[in-house]
Length: 208
Image 1 (cartoon, rainbow, N blue to C red):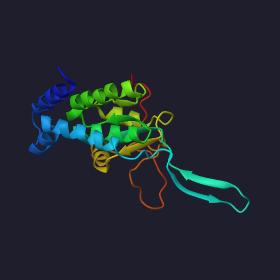
Image 2 (cartoon, rainbow, N blue to C red):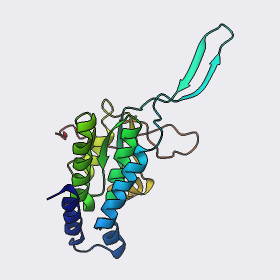
Image 3 (cartoon, one colour):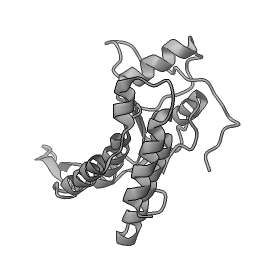
Image 4 (cartoon, one colour):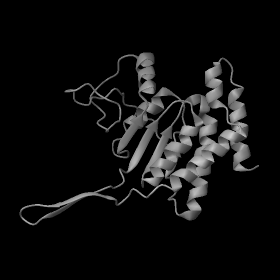
């Protein structure tokens, strides 16, 4: 079975889940047209100019010191998003294009589709130089795995999360212990407030 057929099959299995709304079922559906659209999206990112090393500005200080502002990779980026399988492909490819490794955590309803898509991208990239494990998917679907991901200060350089996902977790889990995680995040904060943690510690959880 080809990777495309495998992804399509897993998409059909996701649609068999019970109790999901029509909108959610539409998000999860991976038919041949949508798989082809994901592949086309990868090609479009490949055709973009390489941002790494681009010089944004340059100037010379009065003492003769020359300064250059250059785009560089961030490092390892964790991305938390809802159950949209196409985001797995888009996020991973954009990170790789900009020289970053990524750890993905999508919605649990799309777990099997996300796993197949991430594996296909990693397998396709390695023959042309993609380092092993550059594209990883969190292999758990519980809330604790998201919290654990956010506490990996020594391994992650940035967490990108959709605000809707963060708000759902706050509403479902209630108040959390603060002051433990200082990872940069794209989630907006009220002006004048310092970044604070909304995560608890789960030292017994490890990712293989």
